[in-house]
Image (cartoon, rainbow, N blue to C red; front, side, top):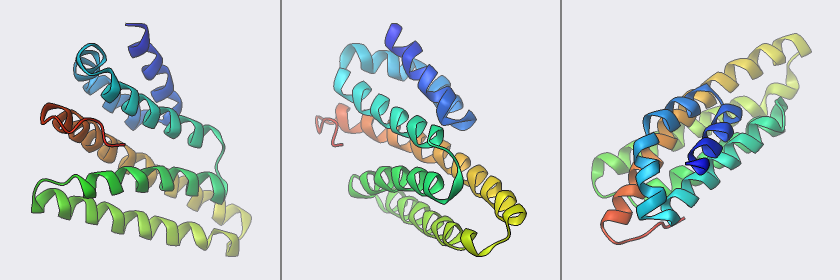
Length: 153
């Protein structure tokens, strides 16, 4: 059970929506830890990456690191999509991440106060997407493991 508490600690650094996801998937992650430790390791690695990116600070580069981690997860989700709905969902997330990236690009042209407000707004958008994408990532990892495809990340 120590590993579950470890992933929860990482989630607390990664943000409130990541905490909600880890809490929601607690039973799934506990089962994966016992039955398919590789799936658990892949999820734990992603939560760790998310935590490190968030800890690395705000500003354009910190926000961009967070977006890039989500892009990696979305690329996996798109590649492992089993139907048109999953493909569309991954493509929509990719579009949203592109919009966020475009917003990050203009932060340097803003005044300090405006840029700070916009960074907070962008951070909240990233938090929201982090929860959605991580949930789908965990679901897909579990599904792939059940189908014998193993963790593909």
